[in-house]
Length: 264
Image: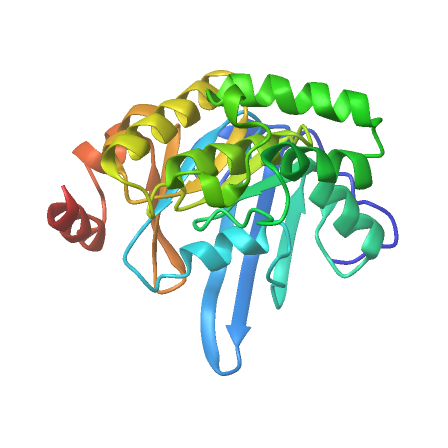
């Protein structure tokens, strides 16, 4: 599906399960992705509602990160449709720019600019991409660092920070663009246990505010507590999806049951 103008979707569509999702934030229809002859994503079809927290989990190599990166076109999907906040994600520059403005991304390894201070890391995109005044960007950075619990680090450099502190800065940087959707790719995998607890508490607070989030993680305790829905991916397919109660207590698929037995 391609168009020269952002594609507007109807306010309600039929979800992939037994419910209807109003004003979906993300719609994926039969999404495929290849790397040469390797078929990474094999027909992903899923809807994610505005304000929903969805956790994506599964074994290594199941294309979880690829799926996440396709949602803001850090990776290009080869066929199928991805629609984010009513805009079709395709090769048209205007559509891509609009989606990128509305979607924040937090990476496994932080991806902070090492030669910039924390302040500059957070204020750069709002000023350059969002065209907001420097004073407003600075106020926003200070507010966000208060929110993530590290206001005292605003003029330090990434090399002076711990892993947990850098991840908090990365989350603040993503939030600085005031996104409608936040994508998080294994946000705690490189952290020590104490930092993990802090980041998960922060994400729990964000979920409580109604932020739409899609999180790739193996932290199943966090998923059980915070997720509205879980997607179990294996070999590029959604094997099963459901609420935490459905997935943890009554998984329908044998493969889901075996995987959970190994990690719980």
